Image 1 (tube, each protein chain N blue to C red):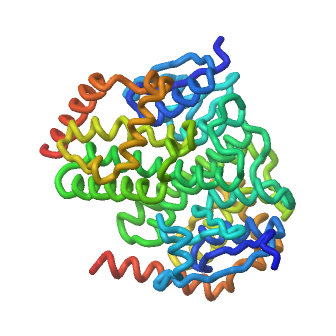
Image 2 (cartoon, rainbow over the protein chains, first blue to last red; image 1 turned 90 degrees about the vertical axis):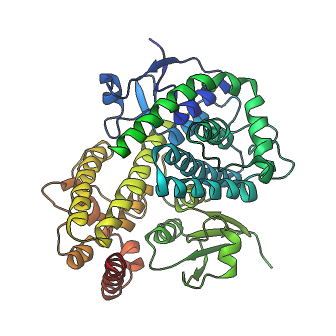
Length: 223
Length: 231
């Protein structure tokens, strides 16, 4: 009976955040892939409020919401700390994790919408990327966490890995790397970290998945 | 000149988010300088300290700014180890409190705003959603308060009390303006007694604006929203 279980869906960036954190800390866990069209009794029992993934189960006790899970993991397993020790820096990190939540939602909106709504979603996404460039990333700092990645970097995994896939599938490209050099560097640095590389889902599989999803969105809008 | 513990807080009496920070500061007994912002004419300081959102509340501690009320409250709790503990120490209990804080913040606040700002079918739908969410919250809070009537004081008020107080503390005034019932003592007895207890805490009573002022604000917010949606 594994002490740590993770209920997730392979293609979810929120799920990926938790996998990154567990792997960075070297925590052994049992992974349970959920089918969101046929949710398991376990998921419904552990997250009755939202019935969503990811859910971390530690010694039989569930923790829900990826941002909450990240902090629980960091507070429970102190090795390889994923947040600053200074309370002020921690508050700033929390701010950017919330911003990462909003950015992740805005990336999803690009493949979930069409026409004017989609254009608006792409515009909002770009504004968020510009904000990260201008206010979030500091010149000379490799990661949000400084020389090592921390939970803010992990929270932005959607920007590093999902955005490119969504852009390819929809043909809309809000992110122009030459205009946002710090963000471009951050993405390269983040994806070069060995543990992160192992944690990110395979690109080809993601492309196939999102192409299928996009077709469903287009079909539902035209009916 | 002592810089050692300089606390400045940018807010507006109209914002329930700013109110959260005001309550947290007062519960902890932290001396602070208050800046009332006019959101139609934001101060250069506000824009400098919160360039991302340009919103209140912003806490500035020894010249260093923090934005977003939930981030600010956690910062206050970690930095000033006096007064009530706003979040539990135990990581699992903290996780549960953060989960419910997120629920109240994202689910309840947004849906209540829709109830305030809409009419007809859209409002009816939002009212039903609020009712459902309050049921969920009622069940969730039973784990924290297994006894029916929570006893709330300035010594044990935490982040969840702060959040629910700033949203639904003035529920009777909201019901008056909207002409509907939001808190049903029979359907959600725990939330009803929780809010009643919170509203009786002297600090909460003293910090609430005069009833006429709150009523006028609620009516104003609703009127503006309805006018702009029908224009």
